[in-house]
Length: 94
Picture 1: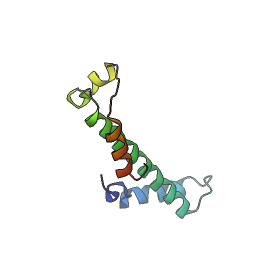
Picture 2: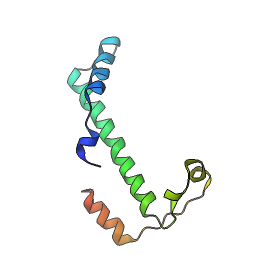
Picture 3: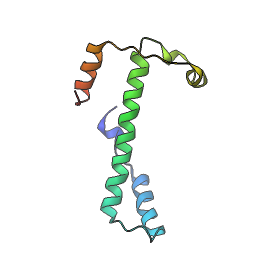
Picture 4: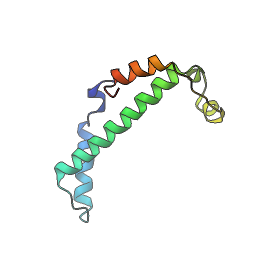
């Protein structure tokens, strides 16, 4: 995933601004509303990237299971400590 994949597109920006116009009880500047919406998109993208990495790198091959099977499968995740530390450094948080 790249930074460009987490940037708001024009339709998302318009939706945020439309919500401000349609909800006069919301007292936010357009800039603050856009920054908050962008932060939420980036946060969710970051979580998604971590979850996808765990699914792909866990000792138990979850990626081979369907969504329904994953929901019904107890999961113990085993990731080599060195792999985890390397990925944390790659994400800029380790």
